[in-house]
Amino acid sequence: MVNAFRRSDDGPMHRSVALVLLLATTLAACAAPKDRDLARYYDPEGLSTASLPTSNTISVAPPELRVVGSFRAEVAPGLLTLPVTGEDA
Image 1: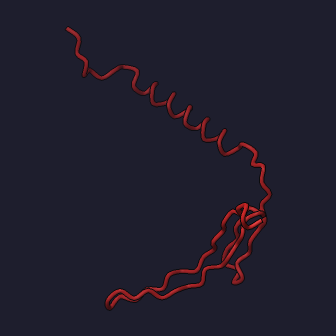
Image 2 (image 1 turned 45 degrees about the vertical axis):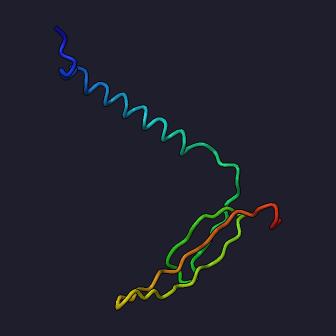
Image 3 (image 1 turned 90 degrees about the vertical axis):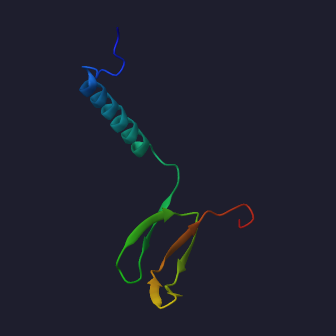
């Protein structure tokens, strides 16, 4: 009789092959050349930088205060970057 639930002897080999395939796929995806130009955005306060697509529209979202009951919280400012559509061009 065959025990279908018996652990296979080559379990570590399957895990290492799967890990190598995952790493190779990730490397190929990250190393592929991108065909878009990037522009460097510098935070006015000098706290951060970002590489954003040149053709996108960039707008700064100001901080805002949210009040829920007696809880007050300030939402951090950020950047909104949107692709230019055919209507905007």
